[in-house]
Amino acid sequence: EADIYQTPRYLVIGTGKKITLECSQTMGHDKMYWYQQDPGMELHLIHYSYGVNSTEKGDLSSESTVSRIRTEHFPLTLESARPSHTSQYLCASSDYQTGTDTQYFGPGTRLTVL
Amino acid sequence: DAKTTQPTSMDCAEGRAANLPCNHSTISGNEYVYWYRQIHSQGPQYIIHGLKNNETNEMASLIITEDRKSSTLILPHATLRDTAVYYCIVKSHQGAQKLVFGQGTRLTINP
Image (cartoon, rainbow over all chains, first blue to last red; front, side):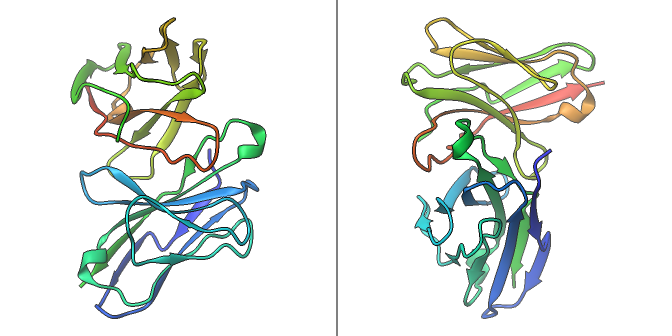
């Protein structure tokens, strides 16, 4: 089982609020990722990180931002939430050093912006 | 763009082996074949991966053809809890390679 955690699991908030979705992993993985998935649709990469102080944008344009101050922690922030941000956000991590680079996913955060 | 082709849906009887095919005719020499599944919008669950040889773990077996252009995921004794969308993904281990999830195969295990 993967030791990767996301909080909150569900979040309903009003437009204009600032939110932070938490993701942490206890596996010491250097690479971490954020994916976005709308119901019944494909996953799309929105952010990733090679390691501490490294962040990159993914394929899908997103108004969210991320930070990587500690290896185990990769939070995602929305400064001003809008209804278009309603989606499921999935965090993943992988360990490139072992040569497998297999990505393990957290349970996801389902965000609803009213 | 997804580099794999999978059937949209499949059915299997509980207790039987579920064989899920995947075509990846443009796979490169350094790309691995990965299988994940997603149960009702939970986070995707890693199942197995391989490069050339067949692989087996506690969840499934992966059979890769000699030319590597296709593979089959085998769940040996399917249970109702195996009902999920199964994704076949090809990916190298270089850089921060993202997982490109296509539409996958919706596998339904019937009692």
